[in-house]
Length: 92
Picture 1 (cartoon, rainbow, N blue to C red):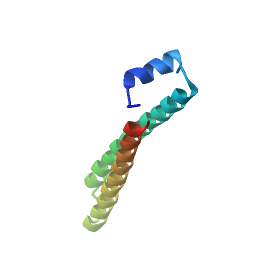
Picture 2 (cartoon, one colour; picture 1 turned 135 degrees about the horizontal axis):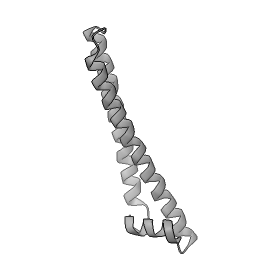
Picture 3 (cartoon, one colour; picture 1 turned 60 degrees about the vertical axis):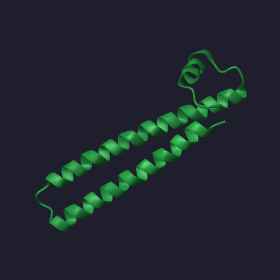
Picture 4 (spheres, rainbow, N blue to C red; picture 1 turned 90 degrees about the vertical axis):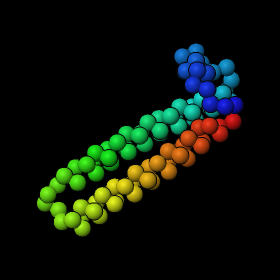
């Protein structure tokens, strides 16, 4: 069964016809919530990068280190999002 947002929304409001479909739809809803949380986390890390770049009390090396850590966090979050996308579209 491929991912279908219309079927998922219909199941949320009308109920799924079988327990197996209920389990699949629950997994899909969980994946969508996880994607939303990851997107918010990427946005917050991006805001952190902007704030660190504007700080003047840090040495250049420390500023670059903080920015490097933040970019690696974004990369890790994007990898989690890629796995969730893979899970979302491969649920069968």
